[in-house]
Image: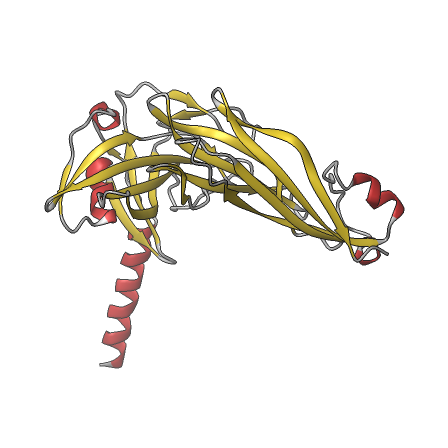
Length: 316
């Protein structure tokens, strides 16, 4: 009896393993990428089921919460999309090898009139037969769908299957909602990447609807630095309250960090210091610092105005 039970267990395990490693691509119509698609979902809206409606490929649930839809569009014309890593150039989407699409955010919010909205954010990566996401300097391609609630139905108001690629190993960072004007909502992402064993430098991006589509409208360097023994920094942002600006209000970026050259190990990689503290690193052994930068929307993009305000403390 024990032998029969063991054989059944082994058979089920083998079948499960084979199923997890036999991922099939489903061919879909190019109509799924139409930004003017009409999609209505009865309340409550389930993010995973809605993702499958938008990208009707094969749905897989693998270990470690690795859930994605595998699909391919033979009739689609691939288009270039920016990868902010800037290493391998633009990404051509949909990918010729097939696409794996994952839900990375399900954001609910209301405007000042009480209208309810929901933003679903997706991560596209090149299809992998084992369900993996690879490529240190390949970002995850971000896509979004925005829904508005009308009685008991969620109606899709805007759909942009692909915007730009952020992050490392084909994994887009989770977008965070931010109100940058009167009932004007956008989202931020912290893009971080770096060489093997070296420091990871983080950039702050602001993605907002502009010119009829979502696009990056702000890029802030020196926002975050991790994986270094002798220096690190992290940033935060604040929207400036200004009644004279209805939309695209100014943004204050504050970066705080610490430097201690005595903690540096022999095998550490070099770090490119923010120019505001570069001179101090040549004359001091350790210090804490704070850099405040003011960004304002100019034309089509946020740009830094005025000079950064820099403060030092615990100088040795």
